[in-house]
Length: 499
Image (cartoon, rainbow, N blue to C red; front, side, top):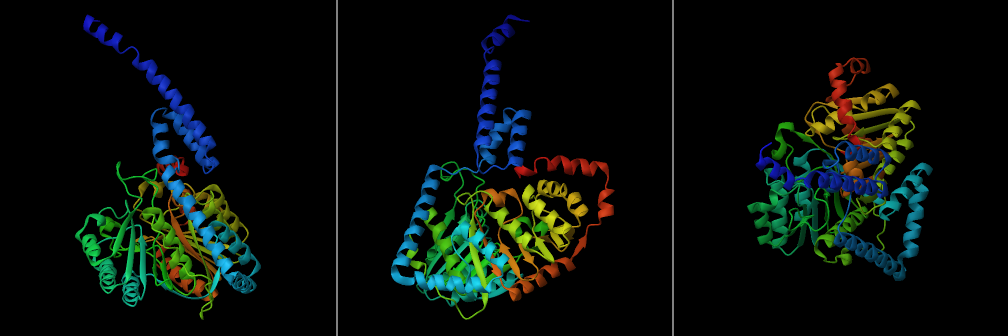
């Protein structure tokens, strides 16, 4: 060895042991954090510990960036302020003398619900604090053109305020109808607020359309801003995945449509994107308003509590519905527990549609149990998925599902993006949440549970349309797939708790 090399090695002799010591410290600290994280389920915890052991330096870095559903101190304080404000709001409501009327309305609704539905309603209320409300008219839209044409008409008829909250907005002809209606409303003096996710709508937030909306008087805010300087709220992949709109606190929209045409230009190779959204007309829109008001406050510190109606009474339509918002601030496993309870309601049939199927063990067990106790259990997923990892990981679960008797259908008419559940044609769920860990533990999601046979059967017809454009996976053919496919899918499936 030359003197120069000897000199280099002697100068850097400290590097290797320092790197080893740093790796050991990072691994120990990360394993401790995983074990102490109350939101991290056992499957996820085991996968993270394995990753840390296999990749001592990379594993800890990946965990701290993408694995822990952490919130910044500022975000946690904002959530505490929102919770305190809602508690004060309810106290003022009760002091105003409407407590008796609300209790009587709640008792009327409870008397209509079946016993198992009442249990589900109580569980859902434990998540966001809102009980079911009757008197709602509900329409279902499965075409983006029809949906946003109707939404634009509602905005044109607005008398007080319009609140829009979406994960993705695109400046295309379909979404343009809503943008144009917002500009018209703002110019005639209607208070218009729009909340768009900083990552999902990042491209739109830089467009001239955004500038035009603001010039017209629309107050547009970026939710969960991204970027080293602007990001204030913790990990970058914690996203606001909600898709809601509220007009005058009386009309609301909730579902899976992003504010875009179904050809979805950012990922048009998978188009058309197939979604479903409910339009609600009645007191339940006020509970959607609460979600928007809270999210708006978290981003702007502007309090809009005065826009939430006190002592909301039943309307003239029959449907009973319940709104709930989930995310890192709700108790752990809130969303998967709700889905588990919905599946356990089923006595004859349960049909689920989702674009991303990476369930945790309890959610998977609920489907297996339903099928084995004789319930027709149907899962509809897209044949082609925009996430290769999720597509491969989801297939790890198929053999267990097929063996239990679950019907798995692959949609061939585009990317099925609707997230719906219908139980026995009596109870249904419309949600922005996917059946995966991201929706269960990270994203802010919005859901609507409907305890109404007519609405559930109409949604079931929409699902039947999906099935008509799907092919059923044959159990015998699935079992005889090439070994290399099974190896890849099961290999990727090992990291499914981390997806």
